[in-house]
Length: 448
Image (tube, rainbow, N blue to C red; front, side):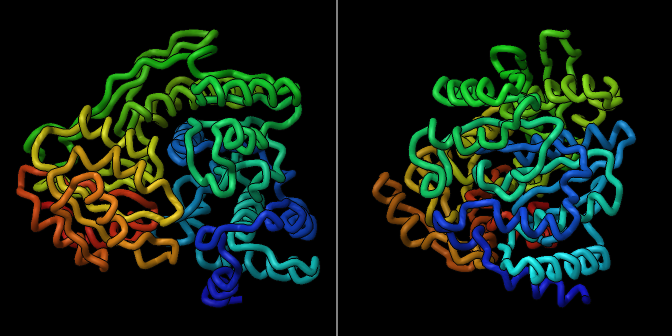
């Protein structure tokens, strides 16, 4: 199988990132059948399994960065990708090679045919990660849940450590419209006897996680109860002229074992300090299982972590910030980070989102903080919301002057033209928008 044939097979499968799954689609039977014919690679890996409403990608990247700093061969599986599908499966920061992907996909397609199943796009992505990580003999595999947890295709694994990051309202059509329902789906990754570290702080979410952990006999460690974080937000200096003007934040973590020294976090925002605290608590659990993750590896891993399109600065005059906030909680994190980490001045919002999100709730959080607003859509996923509908929502909130541009590249040019050199452009609303625009912004030099 060639690389082109592998991509053709993969993209020919049903993709629940583009169309919502039906209830009958939510099971692990296809995944188990497929993996059985691949020799159950998930059983031969040492895994960290991460679920959550927001922060799970950043948290996964921190774990992988620390493992790499410790000299371990670290596999990382995340979704969705920004620009290239190979980004979903990396080892020590390097995406899967074209030849490796083609060989793995040949084996996966043959297994699916023998099992007489038609796996989904994400199920094949998960199988690809398991298969590749075993073939490349990784020391640790960090697996991020795609959607929910209980029926996510990654949930066939028996991890060394389960992690639940923050819990908020998202994917309500599939997960439920109450926080307890959503949490119960996420808590489906908790395995009997396996330690679980939770960064979920709402009482309703905590109650569910505590109940499931007790039922499963899984030792539970919780942010705000068993461990705590105190952070100083990083910031970007006014009149920035280059990346050296980004002053990173720091986190101090207190666990039952010790108070860790202040450590730099390479990602901007107060919310990243909470994610880092979850990771530090997870590191202590992994140490108890024999992993040699010393303090210096933790320090370097947190400082060196990079996670594109998460409050990522791509330009300087004007400042250009790329994010992929897609629910109310993540939109609030964007605003909190802009306030704490960036200089005041005229701010422009360039926004697109999926139509199944809480668009009104997200816009209510974002719009008051921007002087210019450009609505667009992404063209790489059919779930994109109509920009005219976004503008109508804004007008109902009494924002009369909004710009509409259906092509994201043209919308970027409009936002750039509308923003002075001492201003800021924030591009956010969806990972699909971020993925489509990031190479364009970088190619055009961001700001200047």
